[in-house]
Image 1 (cartoon, rainbow, N blue to C red):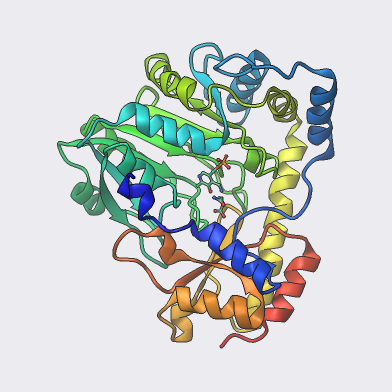
Image 2: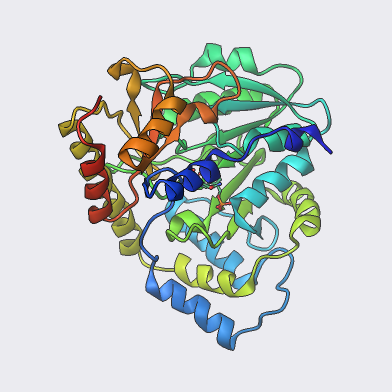
Length: 380
Ligand code: PMP
Ligand code: GLN
């Protein structure tokens, strides 16, 4: 057995969801909305199942979906991707990440990872033979600077894996942060894998800059998106990956042997959904922003020290300000005694973990959030 998977524990999301069921808790741990998602998009999938072609679609994805993805990024981020040679559909962002790491890493290559990091990154990097080098982000700002990058990047750096907006903290990196990272990538001739799955979930009218739009990055970036996040349909697992043709060709070699294709009916529905007008995307954003504000205000009123969230489905509570130092013990007690599940942020670190931040998912109905606030009660 390969020790990387044999010795790793069960994902924190699965663990907390199981504990949540066991204790009859409200699950604000694993990140998924509790509404069923846009009805017209689900209807498009249902129609495609009943009336459509349900055999293997083309390996790179349905042509109409690749067209729709190209039009989407042109509309929202002013980036031109050629649908034929620069876009591939994958089974979720997770497959795109796994395939990109398998395809691009040679054993011994160094890969720069920003902690806190999504839990899949490190095992996938290691299994591909990569050697992780960490940039460790810390509260309250969770930002990086030139010295931190200088310590992590070196002559053996092949890749950087960058997630913006950042799960679990809800940080949206500024244009300046991105320009700095882009300069370092160019100086070290490094490829960036950009996990941009939260690109549409940015609040307070803040601008969102994708790293691929920074000078020197167009040809050295693999950009990854996910329909699961755009349409609040996290179980659909329809992802997409964009890169210049010679990079995309290599990614396609990996994809053809991992999943080969993604269900065509879901692809048809996502193609339809990406064409929805501006108001859909605005309403999704403002709805989530309202939920964030409702939950943050409720927590604050009860004495919980809430940290700001600029994007994603998540906000964090700084339990250090309550005199606590063990986020895992805190989450275990919380799910057992107050019957609300949350995620300890230390699970997103490989070393030098921050133990004082706890992540809550606010992508829930007002009733669910209010019920969770009632159960949480006063801090302490
Ligand atoms: N990356 C990040 C940062 C995520 O938060 C998630 C899911 N929440 C994924 C990747 C996985 O996306 P998908 O479900 O499309 O595989
Ligand atoms: N991305 C989701 C989160 O951060 C969970 C996905 C999963 O369960 N692996 O909560």
